[in-house]
Image (tube, rainbow, N blue to C red; front, side, top):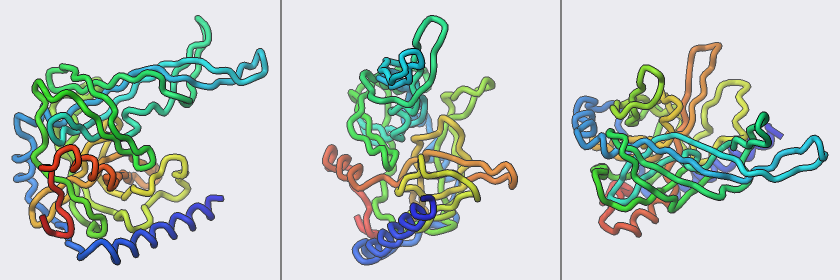
Length: 302
């Protein structure tokens, strides 16, 4: 089965690459080196505290569990809580990862003394909070989600202190190549391991782009979580960084292209890979429809 999935995946990648060459227009090279200090000065301003937010999602979900007493499957309601990161791309809109707002598991209490953890069956209630550096919560709601690509768009009432990013997205996928510089803005960690309001930039590069077969460690079981939109990077992300934007550079100008979503360590070789997802075309269309002034750079032209 794994060999079949791998063969099918490679076929899909080749089709995507061919489509990009035929219909994607002329390729434009990304930068292999950048002025990191200039990017830090542009991004890590006082407004960064209000642009790169922490995302908390809490709620209820119905879950199925096996009742060993009655020897049947039963339905119960459980609680979930997830954490991650997001970015205000313009007033009222935040991009994050889908699994930051969709629970991967639910804690179900069956009695006063017993409980268990199970995968969710159906989310019945969800509350999304965006936190700035003062831990002021802004209520948000889910507007668009693509669980296959692991990307979500959130909406919030554009009032208060949240500030939009002044960097544009890039919406073509055939120009990213191995060695291209990548950056992501994440929250520093407190002494107890929790996410701080202070931000920092993590640097890395492309290992394999979206038109290539992603790089894995031998023996990795990736079928349950891997996305066709993923590309492999060396960004040293940590739990809680999921949903942070990934930036690439063209002639020194930064653009965001997707979100970080997972990382894998190889304990035998002291190496780690991280995985990011391209923003799907529907995300670009949704943003451009919601705000016509939100332009995209495509095929090297405005």
